[in-house]
Amino acid sequence: MAGCVEYGRALAWQEALVARRIAGGPDALLLLEHPPVYTLGRGADPRHLGRAAGGPVPVWRVGRGGEVTWHGPGQLVGYPVLGLMGLRRDVHWYLRRLEDVLIAALADVGVVAGRVAGRTGVWVAGRRKIASIGVAVRRWVTWHGFALNVSPDLSGFEAITPCGLAGVEMTSVAREGGPDDVGVVALRVLERLVGIFGYTGWRPLASGAPTEARL
Image (cartoon, rainbow, N blue to C red):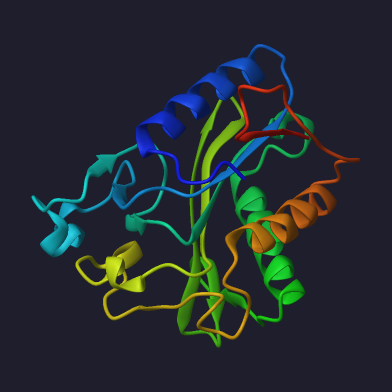
């Protein structure tokens, strides 16, 4: 875990890791939190920004799929940079595996979650959204990723239409009775990602790049 990292800096790290992976380097994973920020996917409807448009919280339009979402402290954000050419060249398969990772990690911390048919992400009781997923793929290398609400101030979602879904209720691990420690949940997510994607292990990269984990 890298702690709270400004969005633009994390985006630059991803770009560098994607370039390294395309050049033949290893897969990697960034696990961190962001200061408050809104992001829109490449095709997102700006009307879903609602009151956040022109407000004090920064807004980024980026190259991932999906609509508008909010990031902030207490939310675990994961950016897997994985070569699908060595796994399976199927973005839908990849999205379902990310959901599997999050569902299993949530079960590990006592939160029962699952899918909703036709909607990417992870839900509690089929109606409260606990994790959002929006990815991009460049030459079969993934970037962007997932945002799992552990213990954030969920009022950050109130100004927008989260994920473009009117009336959606956002929830968190802490609100559903699980731990409020992002680091604890991050470890479970890392362990599940390593297992579900078939890695034999992981180790931190060298000092100076504390946000990366080599897979």
